[in-house]
Length: 146
Image 1 (cartoon, rainbow, N blue to C red):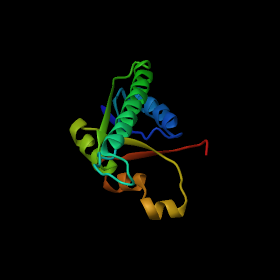
Image 2 (cartoon, helix red, strand yellow):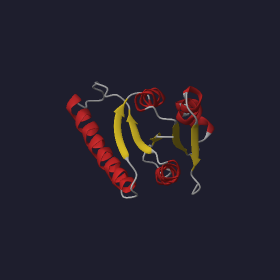
Image 3 (tube, rainbow, N blue to C red):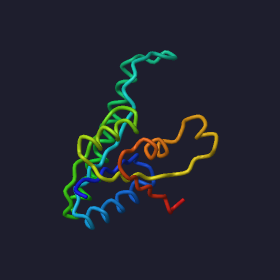
Image 4 (cartoon, rainbow, N blue to C red):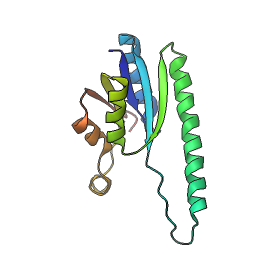
């Protein structure tokens, strides 16, 4: 297993997912591809907020996410593991499928954190979408702190 894709969302389960990815990377001498996806930028003006305010907020979030991703990459690299990080825009499960193909990943590692039924009905479940659509095995890491 030479390439493992690790999908993160910067939630409380992210450190647990990274720890598990490190274990697998060491066991199989694999390269890790850590990815975080963001929704595509949407142009709109609503409730008196100008477009520029929307873009400033998005740019600050992206910069913060890039910094967090860099910290995780440095942490994994310190374990003498080959690692690449990717901050991408788009639908999470589709982006993951694209990156699996591009990197020839043989495993996807994702975390899970439970939301209530109302949340799942309203917003769906990204983990389930990834598991259903993946062409390679998916390891789902629970958040044991919850």
